[in-house]
Amino acid sequence: MIYENIKRVSTKMGKSIRSIEIEAGLGNGVIAGWKSSSPMVDNLKSVAKVLGVTIESLLDENEG
Image (cartoon, rainbow, N blue to C red; front, side, top):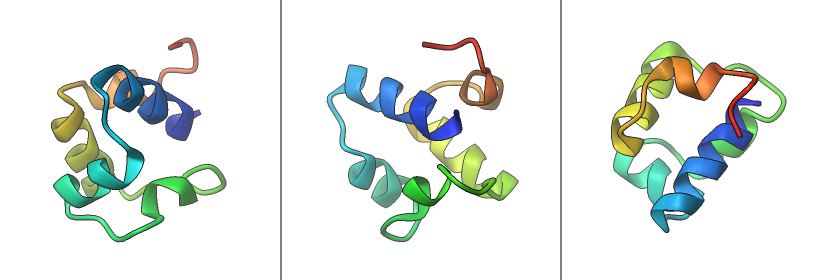
């Protein structure tokens, strides 16, 4: 759910998941890891800031 929401927003922005990770200061594959595990709050905040969205929108099961 979190990964899918990030992927949707990043696609709309024309950015790759890797470019989001770089801008957020995350390691390669960190966001993909959120398909099966929960992110640390600080990492999720960083991604939300890069994407210009709220954390809540990334957690929303109804997004998409």
